[in-house]
Image (tube, rainbow, N blue to C red; front, side, top):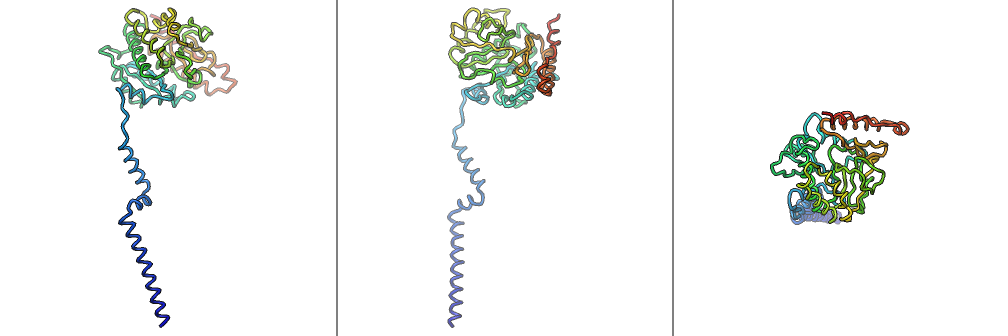
Length: 348
């Protein structure tokens, strides 16, 4: 009897344990489903939480399309890179914009700079091409002026396009953004930022066609195809004064007007600190860099047509590939190929 009673008690205890376990599971299932989900589907719960948080976020608001485009392209300290194109610069067998992007791809420490490039498009075709490349794009309003076809150097339409560019860049400064402006016929073979002063102590750093050896001399021949400018009251006043000369400078391009204003003392009167860039580091067809081991940019200046620029910039790219394949000893004797097509572009 004692043995049978012991077996019965054991059976009752075992059943009691099963009942307790079952009750516990029912409690978890019926009253604590969130705990089950978090244990079995943690990724799902995280996704739901993120979706919930996203719904509660207030969307970023922008004043207009330009404000949004600048914010997307902005890098550290509200600094961006700006280039401006029209249809003539995005069409053809090898468009100028594509060559510019090739330079960023093949340059040293330049690939990531594309993320901070804002392309101002003068027409719908160039705007669509910009979007095709996955760039930050902004379509400039041109008030019925035809900026679609190629504008030969110093033609009336070329001069109008340059002034439209100046007005746009002045607006960027007024919105608090620093920028490097670059023509798309400037190849960025190396990241130029390490060669520039980016601590805010210089208001304007501008390239030169011919460098006289003194980075502070206003006797340098400036080129507005590549420059870095800080946004402040002095540089905003500079661009306002510059653009105000548009209707009083017939036959002069905006670069010539800025050069005249500099010689008339505007830089000094505004208290601007301006540095003129050495062509060893920021070179062009007017004056080649003497050392390919140091050069950051190569500008197809002193050239009249897009066809000639494309041809000679393609040669520069071939030279660059050749240079990168040389040994250290061989690179010291490297020379750029002559810019024959650009030289011949001036002939009648």
